[in-house]
Structures are given as structure tokens and as C-alpha cells.
Length: 251
Image (cartoon, rainbow, N blue to C red; front, side, top):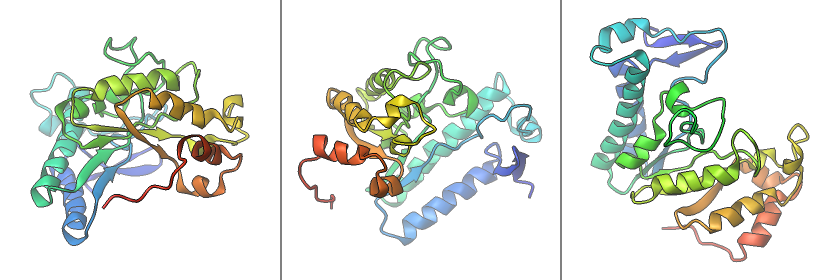
């Protein structure tokens, strides 16, 4: 219980505790050791997404371990940096061929916040809000691949797919980190989504843009059940336009 922080009606392990980070890594390494895995994949949850009017109370851990950092935000980022870097290192020590990757929220920082950021105006920035310095993980080579969740349509004002794609391509350029783009198949045909997502051709146009970027090695569609159900035929359109031949799974 002393490892957990209540926040937003949920309980979160506190990444500021070394024993928590070790526990998470040990759980992953147990799976790597016991099973013939191809890879270990982290989704986009690090520190929790902001909940209005609530505070993630990690004061005790910060007072114990935060000396030497300019502020709590820097300390939190270091906690997640350690989790990611050490996880990758331990996986490679155990089984060199097992890949390690992450599928983060796609906006590292907005350009208005940081000149290195993307030309976006997103309400969440992973660096600032989730303590996840995703750009650093790529530039330092701590992960094998990254799958940014570019879950917005082309032309979406706060986070335009057409602007995020080249930003991620430029971010991985010159590194050994492989880039795959996360696609919001689940939005296609959803009546709650804006007009572009009612067009079966929206996702296919995403792949048109990706084809022009050699850094983009593929696309990952969320989620599998929508690949099967395909409410408006968006996946069928992608297959028709971009996947004319059957692919054999890698061995």
C-alpha cells in the first residue's frame, strides 16, 4: 500500500520510489525470461494524465529522493527516464534479440513551449504533463522502436497529423530507433467524431503521407477489434490502396 498514490479515483504505483521501478522491471523481465517473446511494449501511461483540481501527492518521495533536482518536474522526468533506460538495458542483458518499445501520446512538446517541439497546440504534452521525455528516449537510443499515437485527422488544428508525422520522422532521423505511426482506426466511422473520420479514405491518406517519409517503417492500427469490424470500410480502403500483397510474419 505504501507504494500507491490515489489520484483521479484510481491507484497508481509511485514512479518516484526505486522499489516500484524495480518491481515493474522485474515483472517484465520475468516474462522475458520465461517465454519466447519478440518484444516488450509499454503503452502511454507514466505519470497519470492530468485530472482537474487534483494533485498527485508524491511529496514524501520527492523529499526523500529529490535532492539535486531543480524542481519536482525534473525529478519526475528522471524517474521515468530511469524506468525506461534501465528496462531496456536489463532486457538486452537477458536476451539481446528482444525488442523494447513505447507507444506514447504523440505530442512531446508544443513549439510554443519549446522550439524543438512540434507545430501543435495540444492540451497535453508528454514532457510536461506525463513526465515522459519521449524525444530524449529516441535521441539517446534507450528504446528500439517508438509508436507515437498520432490519433488525429489531417488538418486538425491543435494536433494536425500532417505536422506530427514529419516531426517524428525528423526526431528519429540519425538514430537507430525505428518509427511506426499509431493510427486511430477506432475513430473511423464513430458518430461522435468530426467529419474527416466519417470519410473511409482518411486513414489511407495518412499512409500516403507516411510513404513519403523513409523514416516511417510502418503503421499500427488501434485497435484489433476495429480491424475486424471496420465500421465504414476504412481498413478495407487502406488494404486496397496500400497492402496489395499478403505479408509473411517475420521469423
